[in-house]
Structure formats: C-alpha cells, structure tokens
Length: 435
Image (cartoon, rainbow, N blue to C red; front, side, top):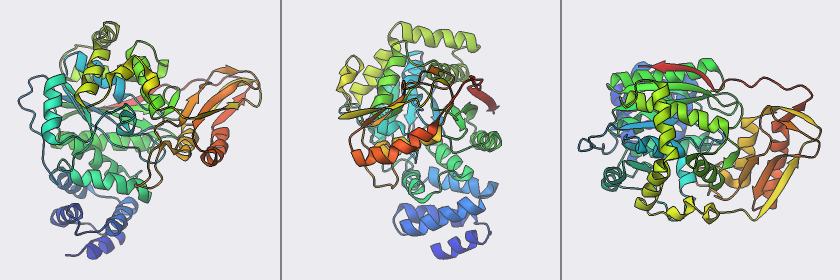
C-alpha cells in the first residue's frame, strides 16, 4: 500500500477500503504521507467524492487519530454548537456563555478561518492573553471549573483534522460535503457530547451556495451523529449577506460583547437565540422555543452570560477587562469609508465579496502559513434593506496596509447594489434537519 496507489485509484473514480483510509490518515498524521501527497488526495476526493462507507471510515480514522475526551465526571448535559462557516458569523462567541449560564456544559472545540470565512479561534485570540491551544487535561479542567471551554484541537486530540483543516484551506478543497462533514463530526464526536446543534450556512458567502447542497450536508451530518448515537439538530441559515455588522476578528469580538450586554444587530441576536433555543431543548432544560428564549434572555439581562464569558476568559489566560473596555482589543491604524454612489435602498450586500475583501485586508488566510492581522476588518454601515443617501458610508474599512487596502477596495465596491425600490429581506432560517 502506497499513497500514490491510493491517490491514483481515487483520482480515477475508484473507492478506498476502510483499512486503506485508516492507513492513509494514520500515516499522514505521523508524517509518513507528505502534505503534497495528501493535497493530491484531498483534490481527488473533492472531485470524485466519498461514498457512505468511505465517509464513515474517513470520519472514524480522524476521530481515532489521537486521544478522546472523557467528560463523564461532568454531570451537566454536555452540548456543543458548530457552524459550517460564514462571513461575520461570530455566533459561537456570545452563544456559548449564554447557554452555559443556563446550565449546559459547553466543550466547544472550534477552528480557524477558512478562506473568506472567519474562524472562532482567530477571533478569540484577539483578546489579550487568551489561549486556545489547550491540552486535554487543561480542556477538561476549564470545563469543570467554568462549565465552558473555547479551544481548538490540541496536538493529541483529533490531530488528523487539525492538519487537514489547514491543508484544505490552502488547496481549494474546502467546499467538499464529505470533507466538511468528516471534519466537523470527528471533532464533535471526540468531545463526549450528549447533543450537538449545527448551523449550516446557505448562500453566496457560504461553502454551500444552494439550498440543496446545504440540505445534503445537514442530512449527512445528522446521519453521522445517528451512527454514533449522538442527537444532532441542524438549522439551515442564510449567508447571502454577512451576519451582523462587523467582519474581521477583533471587531467581531466587540460585536459579540455587545450581544452579551443586551445589544447587537437584530439578525445576529436572532440566530444566536434560535441556536441557543435548540441547545436548551436538546438538553432537556426547556420544553419549547418560548421557554428557551426566556431563559436565554434572562441570562443576558441578569449579567450571568457576561460573567460566564469573563470566567472562561480568565481561566484561559485572557484579560476579562476587555468586556468592559473593548478598546483593549487590537485596533487598526487607519480607516476609510466606502461612500454610496447614489441614494436609495441597499438591495445587495454580498457576503462573498465582503468576506474576500476582509481576507485581502489580512483578516483571513490565503495560505495555511499566513498570519492573521487581528485588527483589520470591515464595518457594514448600511445593511441589506436600509436606505442611504448619496455619499453616505456603506461600509467602513479598518486597515494597516495601503497595498492590502487597494486589493480590498474593488471587492467591497462590488458587494453593494443600490436601487430606488427596497427589496424584500430573505428569511434568516431556511430549514432544519433533525435526528
């Protein structure tokens, strides 16, 4: 068995056995299979797909590529939430403290940015001192201590996915349904969960651009959960336009803090409440959506959700003072407004172009070794459906490099369309799949 043999067979439309996939993942994790060989395999899998047996074997091989968490000592229901990736999607950051304040233990294992979509870990690391690289013992200790942990894969916990995640981002193989499904579920199955809520993004700014693609991914994710006796709920949510008003890293943390303080943009708050409601109901802590939302609102109004975020920031080495003083977050040296070319209504606020513009500024990665600039980003001043006058800012660009600004500016200009008649706002939640 050699990597080249397996690459050629998958390239030519053949299938790989469970043993062959296990060998491939094991030897990539230990370094015997190189990055360039695995890149070729990822592209072959992207083009040819993985059948159900291959997908199960791929997920299982990644899951058992390292240690698994044992959280049996934690008596509270253990649930997590995961998003397939979007522009301005910072929901995990306010959501996790909110549901943890309601009595759910949240062992949230997140990822870094992929292409034009942001990553929860990159955002959290803009908090001064905040550490997301935790070994399994520290991960479990923080969860026991606070009821919440916000971290990435350690070197020993699902290491295959940690390595493949970065490689997919740099090889154009991110929007593959089987690769996305195996990546998400291997991480979540390693967390010893009682339930999982998924946010499957749909639209131009998502990896699943059509409703049918998103529905297929959601069904596969739920079916993998069923195979492992894990209760999974997937909501399909709109990603044609960015979520919230901030796109970047530090600025998305500031917007998340605003939600925990009882503010924040309406669309961001609604998606956060919808996903939180599913988590509380799945955990048995609420009978219905109305009761769940009441509990979540109470966690915000009482300050319990903000306090929970402060506790986990401190437990993971960060400065909780950022919650009262967001000015402690990294700040770009320069700002430039994008003016409206005419008066009217914003009928297009395109997530993909805005996400690509933010990446060009340095908020995302084009190669796996690229460094993130935590301070740069885009503030959407005029959202979809809002009226603007000629010359009024559509967006505010925060930047540190004139050359990067020059690359981002044309993308941002293409992101907005102004018309004399307002367009109907599409629904935020487009469907659901349940176990």
